[in-house]
Amino acid sequence: MSFLFSLMLFLHFLGLAVIIGTWLFTMKRPTVTSGQFWAAIVMLLTGLVMVVFREMQDGFAVNHMKIGVKLIILLVVAVAAFIGMRKTKRG
Image (cartoon, rainbow, N blue to C red; front, side):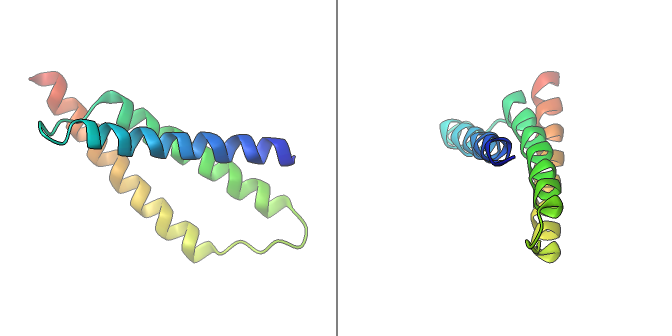
């Protein structure tokens, strides 16, 4: 279980790196890539899996307020990336 949690954490940080990296790369000409949207989806899924792993673990209390705030921020980023990606595809 520890290996799976570490793998999910690595993928979660990898998604974060893709979002921030592409944002920094396209800073001069602001655009949203499809990679940013899919990285946000990967972050959402891996984050939810990590919360489930921690909930199943005995003696570990999950801070639901912190998880909720992170979830709201991630959903805002995912929606913004989706809207930007569609605008970029249209031209």
